Image 1 (cartoon, rainbow, N blue to C red):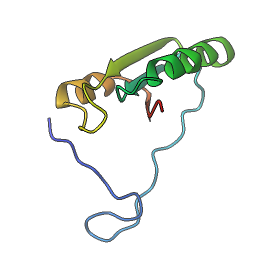
Image 2 (image 1 turned 135 degrees about the vertical axis):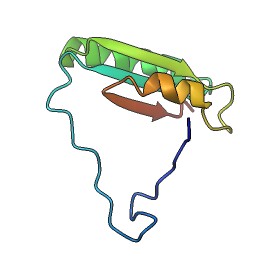
Image 3 (image 1 turned 30 degrees about the horizontal axis):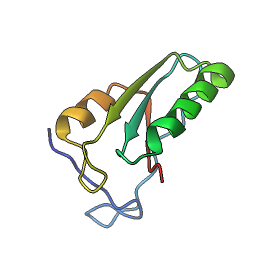
Image 4 (image 1 turned 180 degrees about the vertical axis):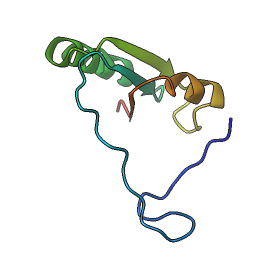
Length: 93
């Protein structure tokens, strides 16, 4: 799997990029949570998961943890998160 990082301001060809369309609803959605391995991230995601389940009806979470906050997520983890309807990456400082 190739990881392609995009500058949100423009494409490689100089064209303006658009953000992905928002989900119509979180109800029944699968949400990916990428933990950067800092000390507070897992606890933060516990709260996020609780709120999204209770208040927005999220059906499932795919939670993955990087080995180190200074390194990119391995392609295996990115592939697992690709099955989510939306993904969140957070820093837990």
